[in-house]
Length: 159
Image: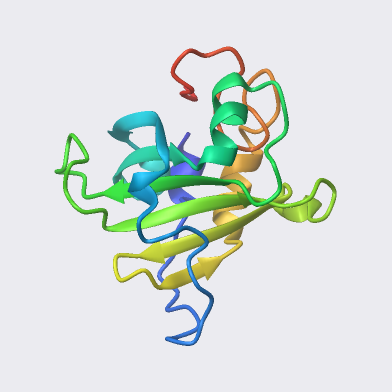
């Protein structure tokens, strides 16, 4: 999937500055978010190691893949340096998807997207590269609602 690697989510944009949007996940997310995909390499995320977590509202839809995500629910990817093979170090950045109302934003798959740097500064919103990659894996049976999780897969991994 070379196209996905080239069109990886996250860019070099400097964002809106200090007065820009706030990250759509709390600083203490680790206390309430649950891992739904363990640490793995991701060519789609600039060869960083990723670990996927779901907030409490997104957890059941992500795991069961039998209902839509509630509006406002968050799927979060911690991104770690490629040398951090077990994702135990501090994340170098995060990417997230926050569910929007069905039909409210078909061009973004009804998700709001953010790329957040290590300083918790939003660097991009609704990055076309993220949406494009997730569009290619978001339709059952290959994927589930733009999340790149395989319907029926036990570990939630997209091949």
